[in-house]
Length: 248
Ligand code: ZN
Image (tube, rainbow, N blue to C red):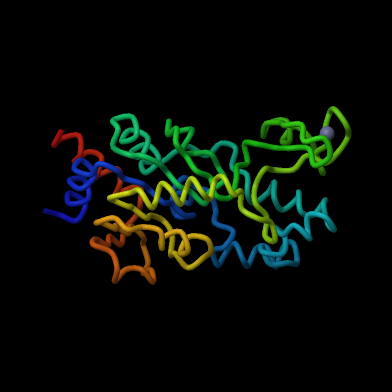
């Protein structure tokens, strides 16, 4: 049995499986990772600041125009499509084999693939909100404007409902993610090196039998996992889904 077949078998056996995903899940849909080496380089070269600064609450307040320039250019991929990983997770959920998807990504691709229980730790590009009157808008409203997007109702700045550096994660989302992970028998972690907050912290709540890590590189949790697959998350989940269907 290959590691991917093993994963498929565990998914079909488990009463409660949760997926926790990082940037690698999105990069396979062609969405660049601003934390990658080329992302870091581009931020400094083109904008003169590192991404953690450009995407901070302070920077948003002080340099709103440059914030939106960077955000529009580097964090929105309007036409990106779900990849094999998103699709496999949605199909498992539809069969009752995936309880929740916890994600650090803000691109909404899990929902686009059909997943319903998606816990977005860092918020979503698809929700935009006026900082003054809290009116809500969609992404296309913002994309139709140039520069700093303005609220049609009050003229306030419309910003993405995403968590910037220096801002708190949404308590309700964090609690739901903790509950999902704490209640999982099988936890599949994919597309993350588990080096960045809050990923590593959330993993502490897992007390289930089987931890599976799917990532191209090493992670600090490799030694604690029952299965480590160093490969593309799309390839692995896509194949595992095929096996899980064949065996069903
Ligand atoms: Zn407003």
